[in-house]
Length: 124
Image 1: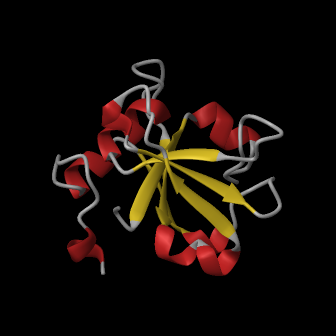
Image 2: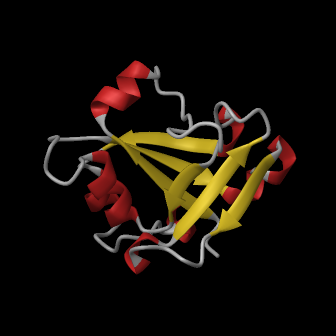
């Protein structure tokens, strides 16, 4: 499993929650992420509904020490998603300590070499 995952959010959701990453469905308290950057950008822009969106870059290595349960989903609807769910202990929002970066799209594709996956070697 990759050590970094991505979560794409559209500008409206991002603004409404003041940039905090919260589950959309209560009471599960799970936040869906993907290891595929292109899919995260797709979700952030809601296809082509928005000109831009926001991508949360989350370090899975930090999750355990901040009481976030990480679960790789094996029965994903779309295999491109490579879904990993995160469940914060409080069930409300992901601790800021596990979010290494929040970036606005579309500039990410240039920075991440058009590959769809985070180049960890380039950012360590």
